[in-house]
Length: 378
Figure 1 (cartoon, rainbow, N blue to C red):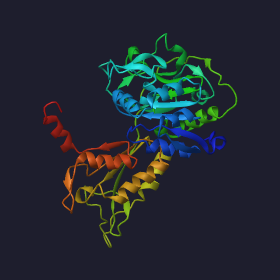
Figure 2: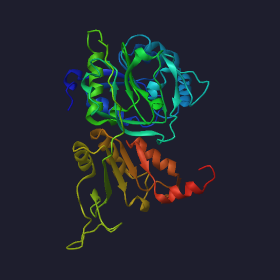
Figure 3: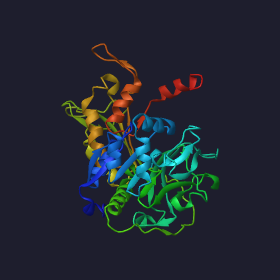
Figure 4: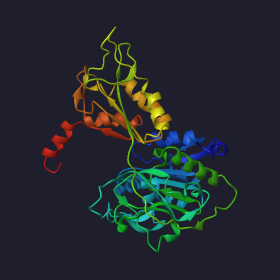
């Protein structure tokens, strides 16, 4: 699955986390392809980096503000224009542009010409979320394995960088979504700088192989060769295959995957044990290996207990994120509640615990959806 990883064993990469949220998945992906991760804690760490990874999630303005407040902005811009290997992900790619309509007046790094803008086709759903293909525009050692549009990668974003004559030399791949005006830059590559709008750490074997190819080029003594080779046709979102696993404790206190009639998941005969279909982490990996492009855990008894302190379930998420490199969703118990000690916990606190443990999404019940629809402006 990882044809490049043998040559990338123990590559030292500097990891710039400005407080973007869930970056556990990316850390696990880098470890999977053979990296030693050095966390960035100062502008000096950026200046001394040999290979820099910059993930970004959330708001463009918050990202830029955090870079300034931590003293990273100028050092990051200097690094990105130095020719040394750089890989930006999602907002980490958008920040390379001059600015974004998401936060007007907030200057980006300005490495690539252009302003990031919102999708403007009302016929498609926003955000653009799911598995889409790349139309490779520039062949290189990094993109050479992904010439076919059968290779798909995972996207989730509401803003995009549009191709223009001014940034044409940066464009490594384009992706289509709705009308031609919505076609966007899904990958850039020029010299040592590479970045993608999609999430390689959530793109299964394709994403891991892409990271490995980047690392192989980054550690190579040869000069990167980039040849213009526009791919024709149009890309489209793929239909989804999502594995949904109901998880609860059995009578021995072990978490198992189960199924039943609503919450009645006990066998009808003999000792009437909780129906055990397998271990959550093992089944999640199996379904991912067999082609599922997302795994969802539903913690079906979490409404009875203390979700924030539910160490076994949080540990399941941590272990799954080390083995499964597709989006990981968790549902169950995401609510305001008071624990047995009388301490109050918000739904946001519950969701945050899940995210810190490796979840990429949370699933909320229909009651929460109906409530939000009743709230003005919700």
